[in-house]
Length: 91
Image 1 (cartoon, rainbow, N blue to C red):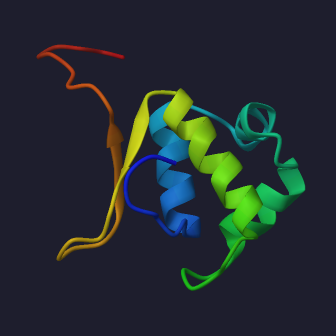
Image 2: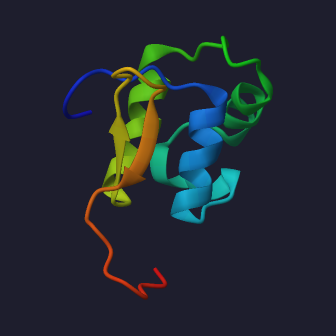
């Protein structure tokens, strides 16, 4: 992952999947992390943790899909599209 280290939370992974338009299996295919691992993590409370290697693989898959993580800087961590989208963009 580029930039500051982001701790993935279940909510952040679900949000990133929604932005990428991916089902859990598509994230599994893109990251190499088994779908049952992703499913179990997404059901955990927000304090839930994921093994560091799996978290890196998932974050890198989202980054390859054009997303970037926003570190906590006075607010909660987040996710956004890496490139600004123009008005009327439907991507």
